[in-house]
Structure formats: structure tokens, C-alpha cells
Image (cartoon, rainbow, N blue to C red; front, side, top):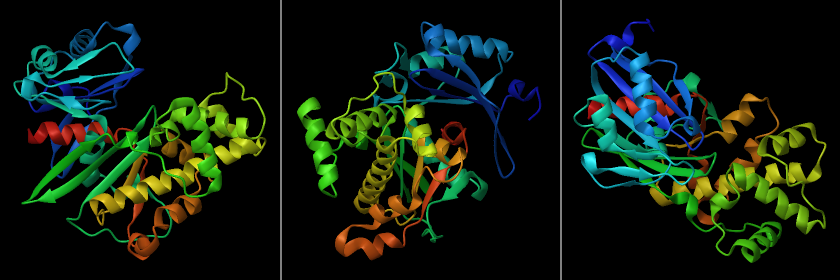
Length: 336
């Protein structure tokens, strides 16, 4: 992408706001697709709010005239139009459409849940952006698509098609009840319930959830978990095979993610496929084979009794493109 791309009048502002980092970029519609520039990443702790960081980015980009803008953040969107906002739980920033419109100079900006943005990217992804989970299956065109992914939390959304339109259905599926598929999982849930009360799928299927799951397994084994242990530490121990608890943590994670993905596929009739985003599974795949168990995931994905054969025909892919959410935002800004 050329250096002066941001100064054209068909540029689109896109931003993915996380609890730790905010990613800003400019995108441009071209024949056959959308180009998204490499994002500029700011630490949210370094700025008092969205307005200051966004103004800094636009100043550095030469204050381009924008054709549209779209921003996503973790959490549900409240309100409509320029009164829309997202209350973030892991950041002091107040993400509002009003601030986006005022600072960017865009009349009708889009404010979206982060997994809604990721869902909108799916029709624009190439085969090279995806990694299949298990043997290849064929998606049915025009049928619902489900997306989920573990990172700071567990994001869930779906994408449906009708009358030539793509309609994103965001949700908070990370907070549904975690279900046990065997006695070991039931014991883990019982331990977690005694400690936390409600046990959601996000309680284990997230970065913090990996640490929580490791702690539960350690306690059930009569051991004490290292309080300084991080999700990457657990993954590395499992990869090296140096810690049985870490290995079981990763295996349970893969199985529970498969079970939850199968539930999502059944709930929305996802014959268009299931897609896995978030930070954890793509990073496990990027680190080499052996950590993310496609076999465990797929077995639990299909283990739904009378609907096992139906689920066996649904393709599952991991989204490996790092800026996929920004692509989805660009598609939303283009169509606003």
C-alpha cells in the first residue's frame, strides 16, 4: 500500500479497541477487495481516552478526508446511531460513536462489538487466511456462519444472509453455562462453582480462564499452582511436555472449545461453517503443531448424540489473518 493512501478521499478509518492495545488503521476500497494498512498500535494506558488517541493517529496520518469510519471494542453496543457506546470492562476508555464522529469528521460512523467485526470479515477472507480444523468439509453458501474465539474473554457472534445482505448477530455467548461432558469436567466445574458461583464458558475458555483451569486441576490433584503462572507459561509447558497439569489444561481447553463450538453450530444452524478467532488458538497454531488438538476439538464438536452426523459435515476453520477484525470494520464502513 502506498504511503499517500491515507490522504485520498475514499479512505476508511478502522480501529480495534482492546483492554490493553488500540489498533488504528486506514483502509481503501479497490477493485476486487479492500486494502488495510498495517495498524498503528497504541497502549490504551498511555492515553486518557479514545478522542486523544484517535486525534494523535489522524494527525500523524496527515488528517485525511474520510469516506467512512468503523470502530470495534469488546462488549455489547448500547444505544443507536451517534448515541451508541460500548462500556469496556478492561479499560478506562469510553468508546462512543459521538466522539468518533466528532474527531474523525464522519457523519455516520459504525460502532461494533469486536466479534461482530470479525464475523463481517469472513466473506472477505482468502483461503490462505484460514486453517481448517480436521478433514475438509464444504460450507453451504448462504447458510448461517458462527464465530467464536478465546482471548481476554470468549467472543461469540454469527453471520446470516438474506435478500443479498450480510447481517451480523452479535451476542454474549461467552457467559452461557459451562457444561460437563465427562466426570473429570464435572469435578472441575464443581470446584469452580464452589469458588465463583456461576461458571460460564468464559471462566475456562479465555486467557485468564487457562490460568483458572490450571489452578482447578492443580487443586484437584492436591497441588498448589504457581500464582505467577501466565497463559503463555502454561502453553509452553504443555508444548514441551514438562508439566502434566499444563498438558491436561490444554487438552480440556481444546475439548471444551469444541463442545461450545458444536453448541453454537446447533443453535444457529451453522451449515455455512464455524470460524475460530481470538488470540489463543491462532497463536497456538502459529507456534507449531501439537498444542491445539484438532482431534480433541473435532471429537467434542461432533459429540452431540443424534446430531453427530449432521455436525460432522460442518467445516471449521481457524482465522489466521491478524488484521481480520480491521477488514470486517472496513467492510462495515464501506457499506454504511
